[in-house]
Each structure stands twice: as structure tokens, then as C-alpha cells.
Length: 159
Image 1: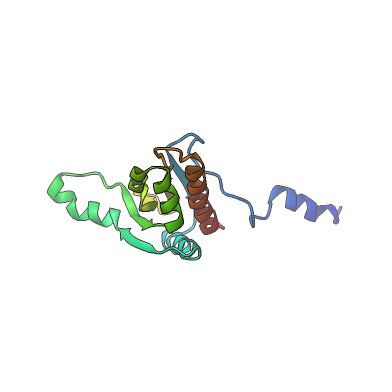
Image 2: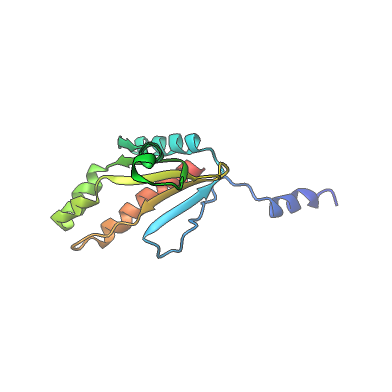
């Protein structure tokens, strides 16, 4: 009986290392969303590390929740949407080249953006969201590679 106990624990409580998180959105959704219970600042830092670890720079941080809160009174926006929300912009020169080679207008896909947010009233869940790329020309493989790169960044941050 005692020998089977660790096996039962392993079956009912699998180790999370190496297990990929799954999006909370449908597979055909134009926006991919992941949910975690990790703190906002930890996830943001982990995403930044995953981006820079691939040789890219975070070129801009958009402080979405601060902007909405700051302008709410002047614009009549009464409903608070986020506890915290930021979008990180970054770019891959190799992906930019491949996208532009497929069609020059694909440069509109850059910069790439990963959004991190916590909904108002919910300090227990952090969400990560990104857009699936839609491109012109013969960019099917580039779009797939770009989606995989962004998703790999998210997966690394969630490990």
C-alpha cells in the first residue's frame, strides 16, 4: 500500500514542469489569451526575459490601465476595466524581413505586442494576450513561425 501512494499522488497531482499551458480562447480565435495565477509583475518580468533571451528588445511599454484611469473623468468612462494592464512592444528583425519579403505591407504587423492584464476586481488571475498575425502575400509559413515564436515566449513566461 505504501509503495503505491507516491504513484497515486503523481497521477492525481502531476508535476507542472514542462507541461504547456493552454489558451483559454478557441483555437481559431484571432486573439490568443492565457490565464495564470502568477502575479502581474512576475509575469511581465518573465515575458521581458523571454523576449530579451531571444535577442530582441522590448521597444515600448504601453501603460493601458494608467491611461484609462487617468482619462476616465474627462472622457466619461465610468467602468473600471483593469486592475493593471500593459502591452509590451517588441520586434524580431529576422521575422520582419521574412514578413516584408512575402509582401511589403506586412511591415504593418510590427511591432509585435504581448498584452498583460488583470481584470478589475480580480487580483488572483493574470492574463496574457496576443493577436494571431494575418498577412498578405505568400506568408503562410512566416505567420506560423511568428505565432510559434510569440507562443513560445508566453510558454516560457508561464513555466
